[in-house]
Length: 126
Image (cartoon, rainbow, N blue to C red; front, side, top):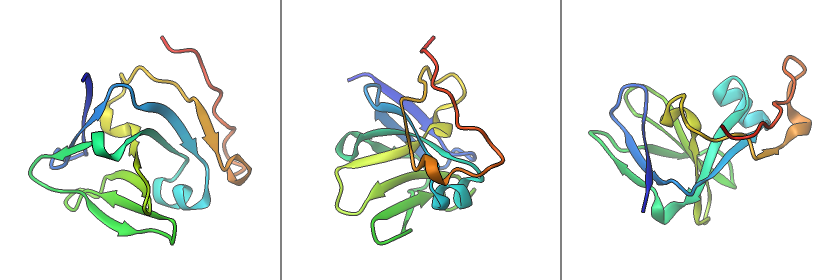
């Protein structure tokens, strides 16, 4: 299986995800705004196909009754979100560098986006 390789800011947490992961989903909810300072851009993959490695493990916590989020315990990079009891994980696109050949495919909670930015416009893949 072809994979995408990524890592947090300090490199302590590394991740491998299937190249077939759905991407990019942009979430404009208030939780994502508070945690990321903007919308959260993520790739969606089956949790069973995501492999965490490196010197550190993601630190997961309950961010709401419906979801858990993970960050690097050393540098604090936001890594992922997963629904409680779900089978998918949503990985931060920032983990995979700026040359991730994906475009926004779906936007959620758009009614919650702040007035200071316009919603991103989906573009064709390169």
